[in-house]
Length: 84
Image (tube, rainbow, N blue to C red; front, side, top):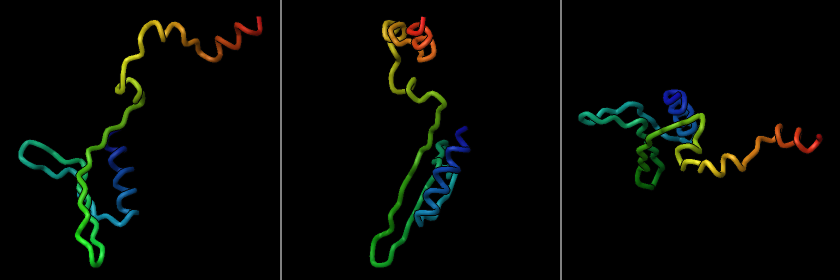
């Protein structure tokens, strides 16, 4: 999934006029994407990007408390309960 996410970000950067390098190694560390864009009459714009993707990104923000999980009823179960 990480490589796919990097490819999507890299494609966006290239379409936005950036020159990109992937997987740049610095010692034991690695930069996911390094992007540089030159515009006439301006200093080069440089970006260092670390890309992460998740199927369930909410779990990375915070855990949902058990009380909230019990209170939140799935839509299909909720609609079935109201029709009975």
